[in-house]
Image 1: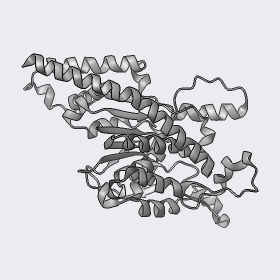
Image 2: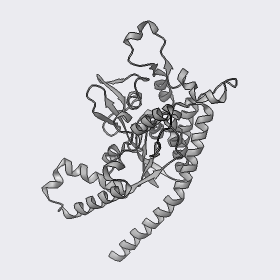
Image 3: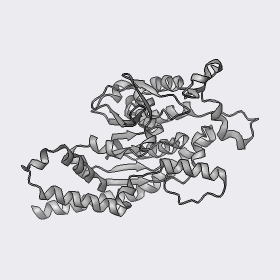
Length: 346
């Protein structure tokens, strides 16, 4: 079954996406459209550029490289903080201390350029016949969200890393004279770019699977560490629902757009308006399905220890399995209803 995937940012929490997506493809789910931001953009590149189309294998290779092997003599409670010293296949801490007054970042991201160059089949990623991909970043100078897509751009490592250039840790990524930061600073749930990639038939029928890495936790902090975590969570939680008053409001919005689309005649001038097209893209909201892993604080986002990655990978698999039980039941029900309607019309 063909689906669209939306992958959020969250650092090492992206291992949930690795587990969940791997389980989806093992059960016959085929990502045909994928949008990502930050670590979700990195995962998206491994999906769209999977060598030989082996998505699960591509994600495994990526995360095997990103996972840190912590020496046995390091106490377990310190494992999650080891990435603060660097991650050889992701980033390294700067050492040019003599130049520190001119620093605009703390780390060097050349290692992730090399990792993506080795893991991703860039010819495949740029072939829209396989997967359509879009990632988002923020223009540092203008503050405007920018979307990079293989539909209108020949993508390379810069476009993926721009989406994950989270300051002050990572430097801005330069593309064609412009500098970009992490797209999660603007919106950590890249649904609108997804809508733009869908065909008319996909807008009507294609399931959109959103892996909600930072679900609303409804937590009230009890100490300063929890305050810091909660502030970060509030910055990266899924804000898309809030515009419509929750999931029920989102479905109502989609239904109203469906009715409006039916009411406007095919030859009406409104259909030539770009804003009308953008508005109609949101009809796809009715197809959004959520996979929500167990909640963890955002401080876990820098835990790239191999044990931490393994735990999130397994949790992502478990979340996907729970999701698939209902997903295939709902899909069968929908197909039956469609066939019944077609039979009645005949």
